Image 1 (cartoon, helix red, strand yellow):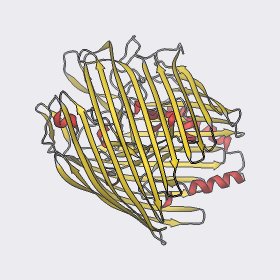
Image 2 (cartoon, rainbow, N blue to C red):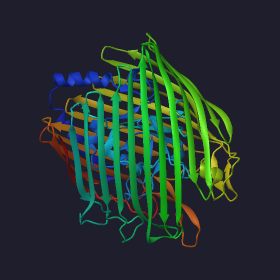
Image 3 (spheres, helix red, strand yellow):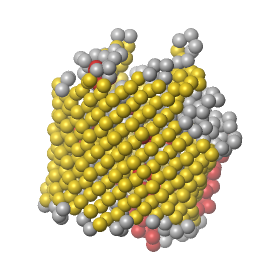
Length: 621
């Protein structure tokens, strides 16, 4: 408790010192930009935040740079409604995505506009461990049912990741490098055991744009389960982004991604240090031709993804999978108040699960956005999912909002009623353990209501959500089946950002999540994130980040092969970061995580990170 009080006092002390400065003209310009911030993911149109019917989370390049040296999962884990279990543990720890009380198979990840997944996984989810934060330009997160626009698995959240693209100069280069410690709270050696490097070149030559990058991370120093043996994590990333503008109306992009990691892990039943490890390798290629015409555009997002996963343990296994995604859509703006999108989304998923397995989906969809002159905004759409095995089902979205606009602020009331579907995975339909080819899709309904108030230096939002699930696919003694029991998750999300002066940003969010119908493992009922960023003389930026995670339930597996639910204690973490810009091209940074060396658990019997330090630099040429 004393550490929590001290952490909050530290945040308050820094903000009090910083507010002593005066507001400048640059601040006023920045305030206007913040008030007119544009979001995309909730409608697939570029809308001012005041016209959006959702409280979209937007993680900018500036915020990502402040978090250099951290993982994608760590950054996302600081946002409201989200708990990424495993993000504070060994670098190779499996990640669980708990958004609004859901799980991995209810979260959809997009990379550069394309749905990504791993058909060989039980949940067919995309593994965020494959990504390097330094290759990402921005992230948008839309919570709630969003299958109308994005299809399968967009039930609790869509994480829309945009990678970096070419700069305007003929040639440019960027280098990022960092080193740090990686130890538990019981160790205080601060041995260098975490290394990360990335290099990229990019530029624009007339109508041709290019970017090529390569990165590597090697992390050692922690055991997966509590023990002495170290379990290293090694990842390589490379990507290429080529574009050509043929005319004012037609452009074409080709993107390629190669991601691979090797992660050592330990036996989970019984828990013990072992020499087990897993390897995951993905190669993706995508094309994006776009034709623009008066008041509209036609775009094709198409990709092909191959996956190889191998597990080396007492129960070895090997998986091969691939997926083909085609999303063809037409956007047409009847006016600056009325936007439409009509599309066709095709996905084929294949995996070797003892035998060759596959299914495909073909989904036509349409969505309409209306922005009125008197404050009423409407986002309405529908999708017809056609699955090669279970048939068809229809999802829809109704998302009205009403905005009261003032001279330098607005007050927005929002609501939505939306549905989504989660198709049974290849493993559940055709896998080696308990497969059931007669499974129906899970169905998810989200009801939301809330408000947002935004001024030139203050934003606050509050949303109540009610999420209802039916046809939930569970694993029992007889294998996979659709549960006859439905359940409901309720919650509240509150976010606020205060910018009293140009050099100071204070933000905080609180999440309450409750599932009364079933036991929710590793999902806190209460979670708080808060942070302060202070810029000194436009060269040096200081930051403090606080996170409180409430009590959770987990399963403990006993040596006699029985199991029981146990309660994990609540914990608080305080992190510090500072970066200094020596020039427009060269920046150094330092991160100090878990300042008070808090001892805590994300999973029963597994190691978490204690106090650790990381230093690095970013160089642009």
